Image 1: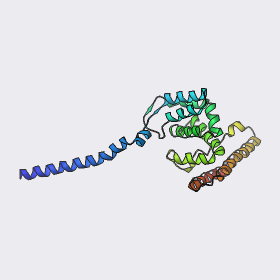
Image 2: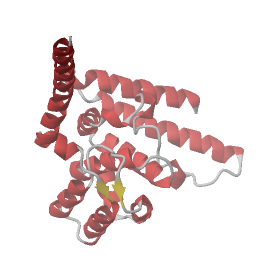
Image 3: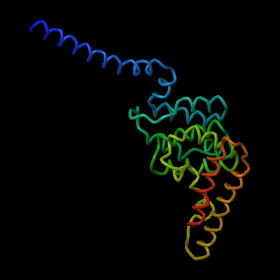
Length: 223
C-alpha cells in the first residue's frame, strides 16, 4: 500500500513538473527572441529629451534616427524619469514640429511612437495636430505608419486625424462671424485631408484609408 502511494505521489509531481516546463518554454523562447526584446524596451525620458534637444539644435537625418531609436515602439508599464520633461520640450519644439508637418517620415514615426506613450494633455494634442498636417503632405506614408502602430489606438475614432491647427487660424471666438469662420476653415482643413487620402490607390491600404475618410466625414458633419 505504501509502495502504491509513493508511485502515485511521484506521478503527480511528474505531471506538475511537466505543466510548469510546458508553460515556461514559450516564455523563455520569447525572452530570447530579439524582436520581443526590442519591443520590451522601457522608455527613458531623459534620453528622449536629450535626443529631441539634439535634433532641435542640429536637425539632420542622423539626429532624427537617434531620436527615433530612443522611443520604444510599444508603451511599457516601466518608465525611467519623468514624462513631463519631454512633454514640455515637445510643446516648445520648433524644428521637430516643422519637420513632421512638412512630411518628414522619420520624425512622423517618432511622433506616432510618442503618441503611444503620451496620452492626455497638450503634448498629445500637439502630436495629433502635427500628424494631421503630415497626413495632408504624405497620405500614403501616413497610412503605412498608422497601420504599423494600430496597436496604439482604441478604435478608428482614436486615429490621429481628429485635430487641426484651427487655433492658429482663428485663435478666439468673440462673435458669430468668428464662429462661422472657424467652422469654414476647419471644414477646409478636413476636406484637404480627405482629398489627400483619396489619392492613395494601394489596395493593401484601402480599408484603412476608407476608415480614415469615414471618420473625417463624421467630424465634418459634427462641426
